[in-house]
Image (tube, rainbow, N blue to C red; front, side):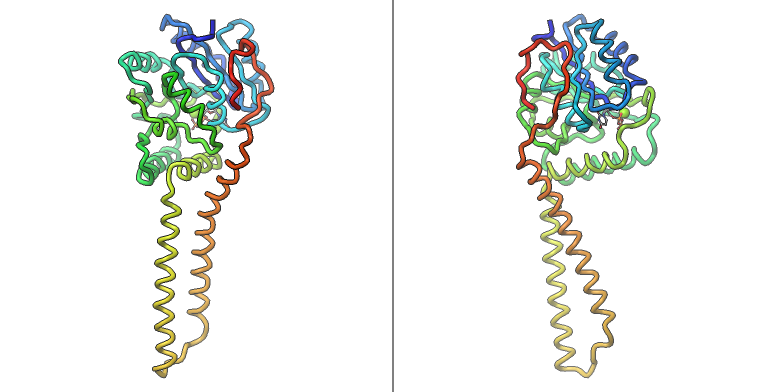
Length: 320
Ligand code: UDP
Ligand code: MG
């Protein structure tokens, strides 16, 4: 029944034992009311709590629910990728497990898809129950990213979206490790539309995106979609060496044609510190790119699955 179903819903989970039952129920209600065939693919991203057990239980009573169980935590964007790899629907919806993205919006998304759009992304017009820090940094990040890249990445959208099969297939072809899925969807093009929604509070539990993971995601986004930091490094380096050269002429002039001798080494120290600082930070920028080039060049599988539940054997090409 799953093969060639109408809608696949991909739900990444990392330690979501408190929300998963409710998420399943609310999702099922919405999907039932659509009157179409569907599957729900839960991807367990190496949770250390009872998440996988709970989904096993659900799988046993509902064959439309599937589980892809990772061997460890590979990260949210990779978990979503795995879900897409294993999906078979004509349309694919990505949604968080914590009910911050209301499942009811899926109906509006399907409607827009029927109008002929290939990608329908959710645009957050408000975010409830998130800290001032998260909202401000997120808003700043989306605008910074937009200013740095020629790919038209819409602001204030997350991964909550519906995609046509052809968009999903296009994304599955892209096997880069530093993944920023919403950017990759924009890059892919096709006919895109948005539906607006209010981002709710997390239903239970706490965020699985600590600052560390947020920084990693934003660096992945910027380095994947912009080479401006490299260009900026080059321009800054050029300007600074030009300034250094001018100062060198001044020093030489003073030494040869005036009586003013250099007083002490304060200025030397300052300059040396300043330039070393700049050099090191620019090396850091280069390192970000080189590190990613190295990671990509290894061409390792993106993830390892330890178990699959409710999938027909041989139904899915193993792309990992
Ligand atoms: N998530 C995941 N792997 C991770 C971190 C998060 O699969 O390493 C999942 C998480 O279970 C949730 C979604 O990604 O379904 C979004 O995470 P969360 O709601 O914690 O992020 P926030 O909404 O706070 O940005
Ligand atoms: Mg959340």
